Length: 279
Image (spheres, rainbow, N blue to C red):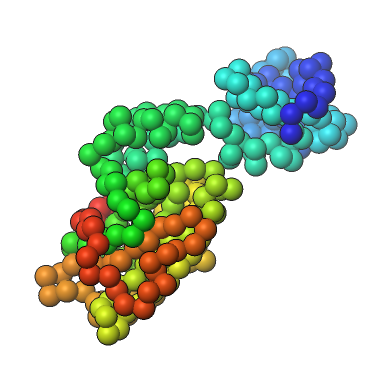
């Protein structure tokens, strides 16, 4: 929320003398009354202001003031005008349009890229620097996992409906998990739905879910509630003699059109994906 009054004199008192971040509970003190944030205190042996020893006392009065103070976003200098209480500070940064973020292609596809920028810059950066890893496809398409096997991880970037989506498959455990991550904020991402079908016209496995923001999922610990999941042995029945797994996928705004059809679609654009190691 913007427009709330900021007491800059109070915020000066709440600034840690070491890291310059605003302090919140617990706020520690030295024997001469100087304040320091808890994390910086753990790394020091004496007060950085007076070299006095730290005491096992918290500044409860300042902690109470910190809890009710109004803070600016740390990205204020780059354009963010939002203000909030300390309780909402971390929540805001996770969706702040001015927060600097690492390249999602590097994070999710394992591509070496040291770029960072705001969320609004990412759709410009990706086609400019990573055009070779993008497949522009219609909302209904197929993906062939060429070397499908247990203990493998697959991810691919597609441009659908003018939006970027990361397709993620994880078969590293006894289960098979699939999810679609939207390159956007949580509120925008949940307006998209995806579906996946694996099998043939006589027998297939299928499931649908809402898309999630790529910022809302940890690839090293995919939550099954955010995936279409099946046992690995169930999926293994549909692997071709050539060793690839064919997946029919649809991504749509609010609802899926073609996915409600009972039979799998034969003539769809096909994308091929190989596995890679996830750090």
